[in-house]
Image 1 (cartoon, helix red, strand yellow):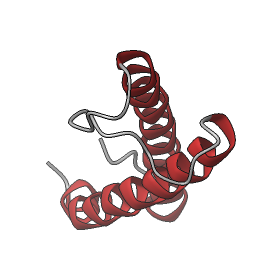
Image 2 (cartoon, one colour):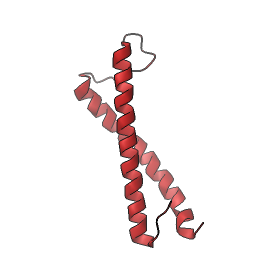
Image 3 (cartoon, helix red, strand yellow):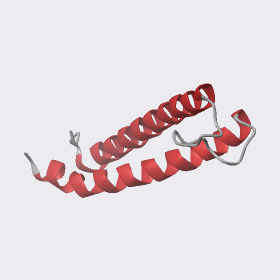
Length: 88
């Protein structure tokens, strides 16, 4: 493993944390529009139906996966531009 890949590990970790926070905020904003509610459904919320909880989970999963992939890809691209090597 070369030095660039080792040096990228903490950067990748920070990017993952940032992606999670960004995805959470994006989901909350999306749910305000899609669900017409400021409160996102929780699986243990007995006042919410199965459909609402499962749709919210699916939307959350899609947003999280897309944001995480975009942030990871951007970080890898930036690393290649700076170091000349791909971090993975």
